[in-house]
Length: 298
Ligand SMILES: Nc1ncnc2c1ncn2[C@@H]1O[C@H](COP(=O)(O)OP(=O)(O)OP(=O)(O)O)[C@@H](O)[C@H]1O
Ligand SMILES: [Mg+2]
Image (cartoon, rainbow, N blue to C red; front, side):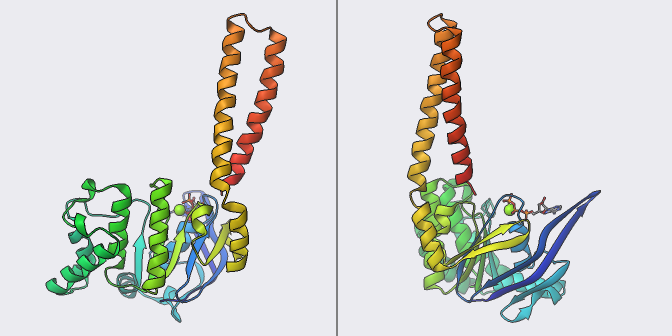
């Protein structure tokens, strides 16, 4: 279990003439053993933040303190050591080596730190069992489904038993049900293996599995929902799937009606006046639905 504190972290990217402030005095406090979700619109700095906490990149100002140590002060050698021992990374695109089997992929990070062969094979098997994939141990990544590949990636991330797991939209490539299974797996790992997990997701219905949710906007945490607030929010958000589905269905039927209207007009079954009147009415409702659907995306 790790605790993570970010204090006034600033990260500025310059490419040519363009300067973007990815993190703008961001502060974040994650307790030992917490499952924290980071949500926020595209470009709000979520990936940059994970890169700072994972020591993949260094901030321009501010401190990132993991288990009491300011990791921004580390030199390159210490950063490499930190990434290997302290952090397990899970990405949207499953980071697996295509010509290795599931088992060999899980063994790989243990080879890097020089774990003896027998020990690492035993642990790799245990981890595959933990993520429910023991029977697929000899399959190569392209012989596995997306959800299975992501479960192997999670086993890879756990290989060296890091106290901190950083996941950047780990369900971005998966359908809803598979996404839910993956997030449940994270929740179980965090409870049973005492891992601190920081997971980026766009999906509020998945965010509900976490202890707390921090919302990023323009490179800052604008809000952190406590467990109680999160539960309250979940009351508002749980029916989201149903609402979403019914809005989508309504949208589809209105689009079909527009199509019929157009054909009726072309075939002379409808006057211009009737067309305009009915068209505008349907269009108004469609715009309304579109805006509701957009607001439901975060
Ligand atoms: N390597 C880079 N070079 C230049 N600009 C960058 C770089 N990485 C990120 N940025 C900029 O920093 C800002 C934050 O980007 P970041 O990738 O952290 O956002 P994000 O919240 O992860 O977005 P998304 O949800 O789309 O993944 C954006 O404006 C982005 O264009
Ligand atoms: Mg990102």
